[in-house]
Length: 192
Image (cartoon, rainbow, N blue to C red; front, side):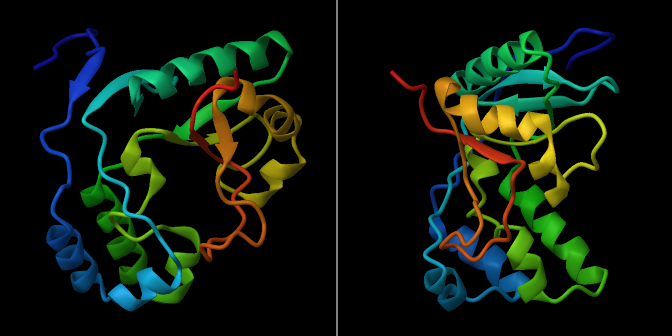
């Protein structure tokens, strides 16, 4: 256990989701059919096994990523800052269980499954499970809103993120059926 102000630098995840039947069970409990997943050509995203702290919010919340993505994020955010652009992580690694909780909470608020799956991946299929995806924001805009597209931060990311290995996952009219998410970037590999 960590006490006081000490922060763990590494976190070993207990298990990698290796059994599709576990994901199928979670999906079934949420009313998400295998046909829906197949129709959208979604790819299962196993949970990351090794995570490190990539960033810490002002309130102390830690954002975890796999080591290579964390290094890419640190380089990218430092480069943006040196160009006078502020980019902060809103969300990074998310477990399958946390993704299921998000979907359950939205269902409990009365949202339809179709509406939820336009903005949230089914558990087991979120890039956040991989420890490579980040949702970002900047000053003067609400987090996770399309208006992020109109910011200097988005313009900077569009021009520079690939240098650090990040790509925009869900542009307008993406083939997965997700709403356009200008804030969602995923680490692939740095450009050579």
